[in-house]
Length: 223
Image: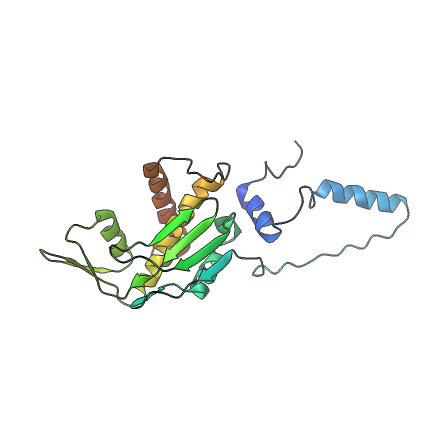
């Protein structure tokens, strides 16, 4: 079977496309390179093999934009934090992501992140700790908060969420960013259409599972 960009494993394809996003199809085909060497040899042209060393930390990252947060809010994870996580995660993790934006959120119930196909991720600014939520918040949210170290205190009228240390930063990076990456992963390998290719519930379930597995792999089963 001939080599093809469509038949190579995703990990190899992603690395090539991230490192050389504008490379034409077949540009790195070893068959073409062998044919060229054979032709040069037949014509008596000396062949000089040059082995280029690729800097493993020099491949391009998606565009990262940071907007000024709202008054009283902050971006728990900044551009430097995002770049460090993406570098460590590798090319397959970011393949197809066009941009990651740190934007202002809206007053009221906190919104953490959003994915807009085909490749845009948005992370919103957050209120300073502690947060005061309604007495009946989404249980999936509170479970996720506690996973990353938040302290939950309940009363009859409100739920107080405290974020000690860098727990909010880790939540935004490994809870929210990885979750939105899961939406992208499902979408990207299904034709990269601008509309969602699965029901909202199925999209959320896949993103949640992807986030959990990515966190386990990233941290060795511990946060």
